Length: 437
Ligand code: GDP
Ligand code: MG
Image 1: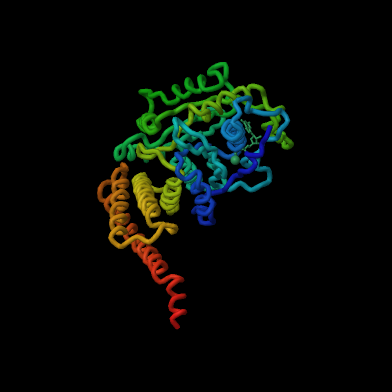
Image 2: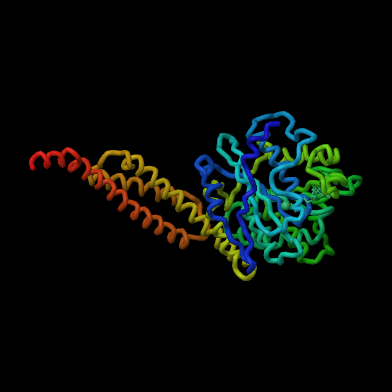
């Protein structure tokens, strides 16, 4: 199999833990990945895998990578699972002696495709160390929360069964989600997929999505004798996500689970596991099943991701876990900031067309007119976007937009004036004066 395209990517650690239990964001890498020219204006599918440490998250993500590469890079509709003897590459898995830190790792090369004519970029996100005993509860909750907030599909990787604890970990988002539901349109989150690994009770519920749906229904069932808190958690989980699924994954076999020499070759993986991979991966990533990231009912573009990353980093870097209302406020800020930056781009685009570097000098009146026209279009674009956070926040950002546009106009005017000087007092005139001398 030609893996060249896949090997051009790598896992990039965007979130790094610091000694004091805060996180630092690798902004340069983030800007590079989401700001790439052929990526920044695309809608995004962000698939994340989160859950406890050493439960095969990175391992399974590498099968997602294999599928994505096959389908969207090589554009091959044949068998994607590949050769029996090829080692599994991509996100670092197994860890071995490597120290495991908490963090968030993004695949550097998104996979590009179109959905109903819209250009889309598919990103894979790996999380590390979640619920690992050596990290603090806050570190883990932060990574889990960030990956849920920033993904359109969150795969919650759990071991052997869905326990009450696994559901409890969702509490932070459901609290946030409820608040978001009251204040914004659209559901706060798109898809949650509980992925149960090493499912041992196929005689009770069969492997795959069908058995998963049955187990999930049972676990999310409200019962009269349940404590009110457990009941409300279950209700809210359902409310906050557009879609919730569960998939029961068979055990991959003893070699995968125990052999230190195992390199990830299919030959060493149980056939039930491979059969389930063939069901699971296209179910999440086939063209018809892709889910684009939305916040407050609006589709996000790759360049918007940067604003949300930064905003969430700020609120999650406090000494305690943020209150849901703080997370909501950060979301609203990032949402307005995205609208501002998109509208500023509209102004710039229109102005570049008439007074860009390669364009001739424009007289003062025409320049003024063009500026007014571009500014109005930009303001219109800003107002047309549905925004979170109420009218006060919106008008703050609108004022900021006007200020930034006016500043930019000063720059355009100066550049335009410089052209005039060149045109009228350029080389010929200097030559002329030389001749006169
Ligand atoms: P992560 O920490 O969750 O990312 O786990 P890794 O993907 O690094 O895998 C940790 C170990 O689990 C590796 O040795 C894998 O071979 C093994 N492994 C992968 N998938 C499974 C699975 O479904 N069940 C079991 N029991 N082990 C698995
Ligand atoms: Mg891992």
